[in-house]
Image (cartoon, rainbow, N blue to C red; front, side, top):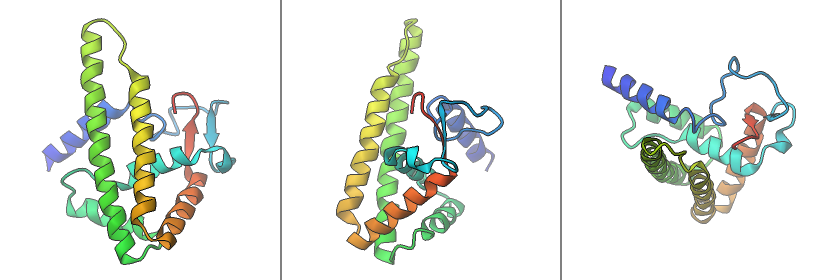
Length: 171
């Protein structure tokens, strides 16, 4: 159990620079002009960012614990999908997370190599790949969910914008 927490802690620490838009702690940043507060202006948060945050928040790692699966089912249950659509969403989110984690690992390796050469890592390439992954995941969902399921999911993700705060710099 300690290993799990240690691995989670290490993973979160290594992802912290990449996750600033996903996990902004309220006490770390003051309200500035480069932040969109979804509670005030949800319409200013792009759907692509809302989906990225939703996918990251509701996907699990490659070996989810029973607790992870229960948390995921509780979160995904709020969307109101039928059982087949719910199973499809879980499957697609699993694929998303595996690919996302591989992208992060690839970026971390290249950034470490760049640092060793006293150079900056190529964050822009990572961000393009990450955004491409979000869009391809959305496209996959449009093909694999029922029309009613995709409407429910889209409506739910858009409604969740009111709970998001996003920094516009380096989205």
